[in-house]
Amino acid sequence: MPGFETCGPNEALVVSGCCHSRPHMVAGGRVFVWPVIQRVQKISLNTMTLTIESPRVYTQQGVPISVTGVAQVKIQGQNSDMLRAACEQFMGKSEQDIMHVARETLEGHQRAIMASLTVEEIYKNRKRFSKKVFEVASSDLVDMGFTVVSYTIKDISDDEGYLKALGMARTAEVKRDARIGEAEAQRDALIKEALAEEDKMAAKYLNDAEIAKAQKDFEMKKAAYDYEVFTKKAESDLAFDIQTAKTKKQIKDSQMEILVVERTSEIEVQEQEIKRREKELEATVKKPAEAEKYKIEKLAEAYKNKLIIEAEAEAEAIKLRGEAESYAIEAKAKAEAEQMAKKANAYKEYDNAAKVDMILETMPKLAAEIAAPLAQCNKVVMVSQGDGPIGATKLTGEILDIINKVRSSIDTIAGIPPPVAVAPVAAAR
Image (tube, rainbow, N blue to C red; front, side, top):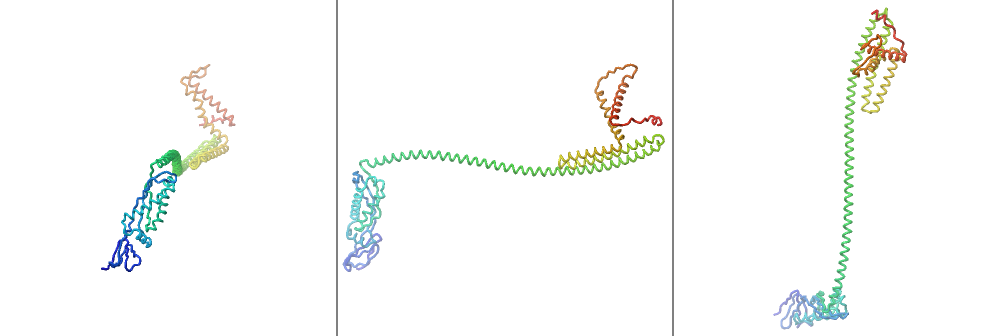
């Protein structure tokens, strides 16, 4: 009964007989077949793995070696000419027979190429050897419908120790290169270690420099902050001192005003007293009274001016003390100079009276200086001659004589006339 025949993708159907002048081939499909008058056969398209052994083949140098290769071959089902050639040669044969034919063909080409190369070429460049075998074998196997999928060398050996000798030489070279490489590696390691240490030290110094720079910046900023704080504190202290000085000046001014009022009152009282005394003593002591009045008036005026000048100088000194020490000293010196000038003018206005006033102010100090050595004595021994006074009376008289002589000398130097005899006045009183 006619029907369809099918095959898998790894098989090919070959239909021959009636209606076909040449066999009809279908790879991996189906075909309509008439039984009896048509015949259907199958051929495998599986890939076949072949082990190609070529023992003791003499190479170009005459050195016998053995090579074992592995090839992958298959019948090409996609090319109708190659499939037809394979069907013509292998239809009806078993897969083992097909593999044997392919193996023998590859083995022959492998031996031929081994004979044309040296051991070193085969051993060192296996890829080149495999490529040559693949190319030469493929051209012959194509005619039989085979396609060489791959070919590689599995093993190379020899019975004479040639490959071992090559290996020993190569091993020696490798060991030599290894020692050289190790030495170079150690050298490079030492160099890199030194460079790393150098980088480490450079980084450390750089880090130390950055730390020092940061410390410097911190110190500078701290100094700036401290300067600002101290400046503000100094300004605050100065403002406090100025305010204190102003307050003291106000108090001093008030005190001076009170003192001036008091002195004015005293002067007025003294003036009234002088007027009274003038009227009382006008008949007998008019001129001495007028001189005494003039003296008192001038002394009062000079003392008043002195107090005012001193107050002004002190206020000026307090005002300028916070601004600058040197300016304060200068102001003080100027005030003292002005004071001295005013004193000089005052003394000039009442010549002898001022001199007398200075002498009167100086005499107690002079007497104290003269008596000071005596105050330090624990014991005084005095020798008297004649009928003169002795004891404390004599000592006091001698001190008074010294003072009178000193006063006379001062009067002479100052140009002060001898004092007017006031004995009658005393008598009158």
